[in-house]
Amino acid sequence: MAIQDSIVRLRRLIPRTESARPREAAAPPDWDALYESLLPRVYNFFVYRVGDIAEAEDLTSTTFEKAWRARDQYRHDRAGFSTWLFSIARNVATDYFRRQRVELSLDDSPDRPDDVARLPDRVAEEHDERARLAYLLARLPARERELLALKYGAGMTNRDIACQTGLTESNVGTIISRTVQALRRQWDAADQ
Amino acid sequence: MKDEFMTRLREDPRPEFKRDLKQRLSRAGATRMSTAPQRFLNGKLALAGLAGILIVALIVSPGAQVLAQEFLNLFRVKRITAVSISPELISQLREGQLDIESMLSSSVEVLREPADPQTVSSLAEASQLAGIAVRAPARVPDHLSGPQIVVQGEGVVRFTADIARLQAIVDALGVQDVTIPAELDGAAVTVTKPPVVALVYQRGPERGASSVVFMQARNPEIVLPEGVKLAELGELALRVSGMAPDEARRLAQSIDWSSTLLLPIPANAATVSEVQVRGVTGLLILTTGQGGSPVAVGDEQVAQRATLLWSEGDTVYAATGNIDQTTLVEMANSMQ
Image (cartoon, rainbow over all chains, first blue to last red; front, side, top):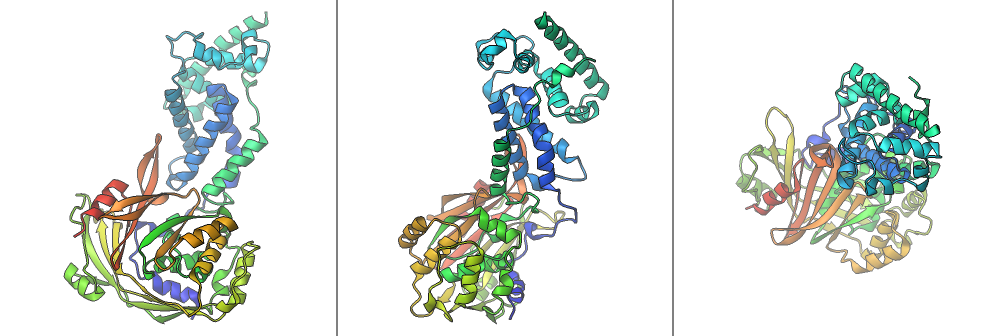
């Protein structure tokens, strides 16, 4: 008797549970392609968000591991995969800052020891452009920094950011424009 | 808007980081990420340590995992121990690289087919049919209704070892230093599966599906051929499951193979812990994935399924469902 037959028969031994029900037909995501395309975006989101390469790697790992564990919950009909993934990434960032307690609010001094300690020495000298930008981003309020991270780190459009954050697209554009202009002035001032 | 300076921080992730993360994800789910999500618990009840050669056969086929799942109830279980299965083995199974079913098609024979499941109206009726004193949880969460009581009759399966086929499977799995003992050739293991009683609790008619199932059965009977060295077979099974030779040897020698059920758990697919259930040590397995009720993991809601296994006297129990572990253990402890 073929083993397949015996399997079918033995399956009857235990009643089917929810997990045994067939899934609705849907093309499974191409995980390889999604990984290749989204990993750099998520990684750079965290680079812009936290300003630290090692932390960005850790948070990127956390994001993908959470997404991978919860991949069965992703609903194709509700949101694009990147939207779903970045919602996880944003939560991971929130958890991170909650733990670290280093996120600057509007009332915080930008020169708190914690923040300065996170920056490389050359930041203070403002000779390195990467470090200089990281330094400027670290002084931003959380919301503005997150919007810039989504825009320039994750490479999202203002419309995507609006969907992600719940802000209107015009509001997103206004905040980003205003923030970038302010950073531009600081950037140029450092050049002089 | 002059914002070109804003791109200064952008960079490609380090190739090592990219590669390592992908490998970790692969170990957590599948070697190739493009593999469709798997239900890890489909095979969670697979493989009894008693019949190592059966493990060799059963572990290596996705379809056979279903068969193996049934074997959980077939061994005289006094202790249940979890062992981790190598990611490589899991990936081979998932990707269908091994056509084990066809390789073993002549080795497994159903001597007596279990009757179709029969719904009964009382625990007493189920007890009479199953030959055990059927117990039911006294404490049931308000959102669960039931139980529906289902009894599955006895079945008998015989597995006849063909060492050439088994060696081919071991080789195909890439386990280089394992040799199937020649004396096993033609050895037959007869397994009598006792009647199984399942108590099915549902979340509600609108869900249309069961959410928690309690199963119980008399310890099964195993008939092994003379000369079969259980520890040797167990070691073989551990090696095939991906364990290092020294570790497999050490563990094989420390296990009472006549009463220990080895439960293979894919690495990183689940968390396993021992819990006290009704005065004995049981095994609690938590898995995430499809079909589980959402639980908080950080800020995310992740599906989780809890499975509890234990043995009391001559009866083995299994409870599983989309339910938090505390509630499941409480239900089990309240069985009477």
